[in-house]
Length: 71
Image (tube, rainbow, N blue to C red; front, side, top):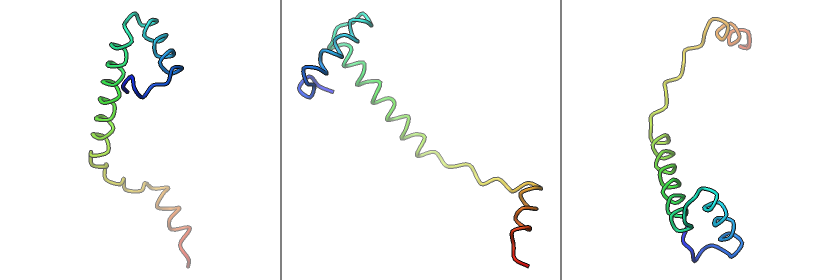
């Protein structure tokens, strides 16, 4: 998020948050951008991970399946 894309209200809001955290606005925005990039990489890693194999149905699950089958 660069300074050019922020409106005056957004910039004021981020300035307040930066002051509350005890850092400059530029440093705050750089850290925020870095966190967003790390989160995006984490989301991509989770999406790329293979899903666990389907679990075999238990005793009651098999009974319910048999009960729902037509005769």
